[in-house]
Length: 255
Length: 229
Ligand SMILES: Nc1ncnc2c1ncn2[C@@H]1O[C@H](COP(=O)(O)OP(=O)(O)O)[C@@H](O)[C@H]1O
Ligand SMILES: [Mg+2]
Image 1: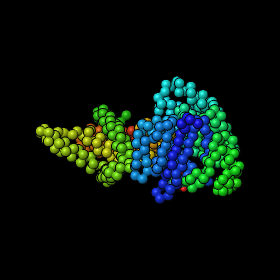
Image 2: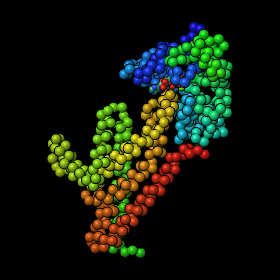
Image 3: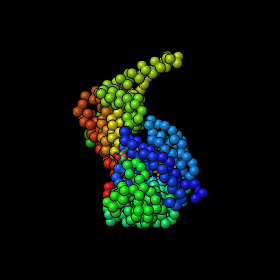
Image 4: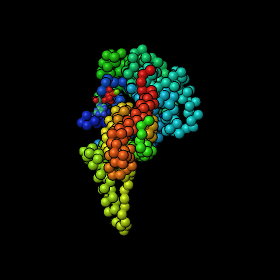
């Protein structure tokens, strides 16, 4: 492993008002890694993921993307981007899929997927449209491209949201509980799309409660507890012989 | 046919002025309203104070007084400024400019609250989805937030416009040749107050109905995709 990690997080801390939610989390993702992040509710999984692309400003820590350290400067108690250009560029290459989809309701499915490449990356319209249709096809929504998000089921909306992220050709994709807002019968279709992405060799960080999915697709599993990495390793290690007692208790309660 | 004693054309010209005044005030007011809302939601405290002072003063003064104060005050203020630059001739602020300023300020103060509510009603996730894509703040506002704010704000703004339309009549007091003043002129020359005031009322009513039709059409257009189908 001489190649630099695609994404490296070093000693990420986050304090909200008076509670330290992240207490120093470090993580490396190499190209093609699929890292699942597990943990009970409130353990800091979302906060950690949101600190990576500065949807949340970390209180302390370093973010290195493609060997380039994100420039940060103190802003009150937290760190904020010191170079907006650099941050914007990094965000364009790190996709984020939300638990609540966050599709834009005033745009059609196709417009949602085209928005990034057309208006952020400023790629030619026809090329963007062809690519968007290709991606919608890939996530199985091609026939709904002229509908509005509110006319789709949750599973369909999340697949559109994944296509919207893919349209930017991100190098790394972050997923924050992508199936937690879905009715149980719709979870499978979204996991199916994500499995396909993993097989393609996409680099992904996935916060999830879908244990069998995590076990199957991950190259590494991380278990967070109260803002620290309590356990990490191969899926086999974490699921079958974890060192941490808490990790074992968590897995037996949910899996 | 009702006999308007030859004042029909005059009244129509007045209607044109009324519509022009209303549209110009609307444009000024929409811009002020958006700026006011942005200021009220700003993290910069002096901007919030400024916006609060603006909306409090304008909403606390009767519209008629605002029109008079702007009309007579603007001349004094402008002449004072001009004399600083060695220009001492009389400067007149026309009734139209004064009317647009007064009604634009008024509309803007009320629209500030409408826009503020609409901006706050947009879920945080809408902003975050754009930010996470690497979209800049300006583009995010223009492409993602404003279209949704517009949809939420439209009914409230439509209502304010109907009020504005009728407040234009106040500007006749400083000599603007709108429907109201044309009607007054006709009354004093024909001594038929009921005829001309009723005609003026019908004209305002017609303008109101047209406005309502336009607003309904805009609302329908803006809410595409918003209902579950
Ligand atoms: N914006 C915020 N302000 C204050 N506290 C927050 C905020 N976001 C999250 N928290 C707190 O941080 C802790 C971790 O939250 P989160 O990262 O969402 O956990 P998880 O995703 O693992 O469920 C929780 O106790 C939560 O209440
Ligand atoms: Mg969470």
